Length: 209
Image (cartoon, rainbow, N blue to C red; front, side, top):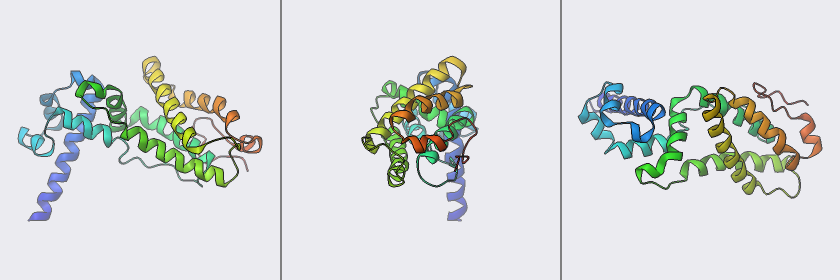
């Protein structure tokens, strides 16, 4: 009997987390309430507090698990693959409520007494991995520091998606990310690499050979 109970507990936690993401995405941390989240999840108060101690605990979980379940595009590691990942994330932000809510809460985290850059650091680590591969492939200019560039890219991407959210509810985010790369690449990629990269929305895996 233990396994069915464990499976049910996993499903219940996931339902509460998804409901919390929806409510946080719609209302922000301040506008959300435990009662609204429980109602959205169609769960009991006991189930809620079995998995999460408070609204703050729920917010931390949504923020830190924002990237869970995202299936990244396939491709050979390197600069084109990094571009493809950022464009894919732009479309995910248009439809993936857990990612959207996690990003929003990362900005609002001061409202629930948190100063945690874990989510940003995790994205920087993913980007850094692709940049190390790009270095090995000879795609980066000699003066580029891969770790610094990963930090800059996460910072620029964060600002780009926030601006897009305010302006168009992220409807134009893929185009804005493509524009970000248009101005960033001349300072980081070799001319030969830039000539074969594709940065437009929907261009994943279509680099010119």
